[in-house]
Length: 443
Image (tube, rainbow, N blue to C red):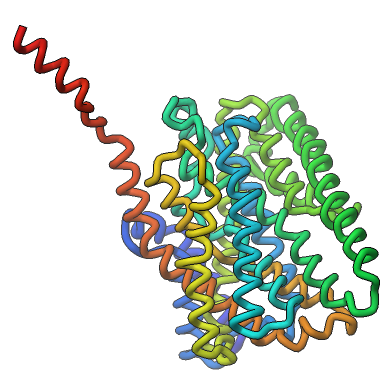
């Protein structure tokens, strides 16, 4: 079997999985990502000519493939959110972005430096790579299609947020806001030849301020423009209906391309554009078309990346790992993110059950692949520390993502079902209510 024939089989099975498996796996302790990774591992083992990509040797290819998956997922994430943007009602998001993410980055960097013995720049990079919650692999815990939670989000019990909204909005924003820390790692690696206050000021002003501002402004402008074109244009012809929802992909590519061209963070621009697009005609049914088209493209691309990830594992991606590496990788999933998440919600009025679930489901995935491949594809000879550790970094990221896919894939369905049942269960009366009822019966 040639590599071309093997690729056709992979595409066919990936398409079949995207169509059939969601119905078969609903409510079960399994997930599509688990299936695709296993498929890649089996195919590469059984068919030696099956295609694979060495992410270390092909950083640029890996970067662009994972980049495309993430930006389309960000558009889908923004379109799912049935909660109007408001500083107060998005409080859970600000906590996850402003407290949980920096704590996660710092804890991972510290573990990597002190326990794994990585160079400080490499440790910071690993923290930035593994901190964001992934918008691609979080389909079992994120918000549903547009218009499915409008009433629920308006309920008083959800004024602080909700589990699905919190994880979706976090995944939408932190994939862009982790970028400054990736640039920080590159800057630290090159800092030996530069005065500290010079490179630190440049990082803060350019990577921390300018790029974020450009992403926010262009995302809003392009989302607004696309919304006007989508909802205020004349009714489409029958031929145009065939491409219903394709405007979501147009908005994604336009927002990302223009923003990156002007030096901003394209990830932020895409998510903001999606939020602005979603804001227009809030209850219009066409939002479902936009979301479904983006979700279809995202799922197909996700299948390709995860099959290649499974093939890379079978090809020895995790071979550089030591026992200590594996323990630190597990700690990132079961200790670092959950504890950082709980600390982020200190002082919140969110129920403890919701805080625990949000903190636990900090899913790592394709976004981590993108950040690592981006950093390794853009370093120069001044940042040799990052290149030297490339294979070990890929192994560390690989084991964390694999653990997340399995652990979160097994637990997502049962945990979310249990949470929904608990939320829909009538609250038992408190002692005061019981006493009043008893008094009435006595009277």
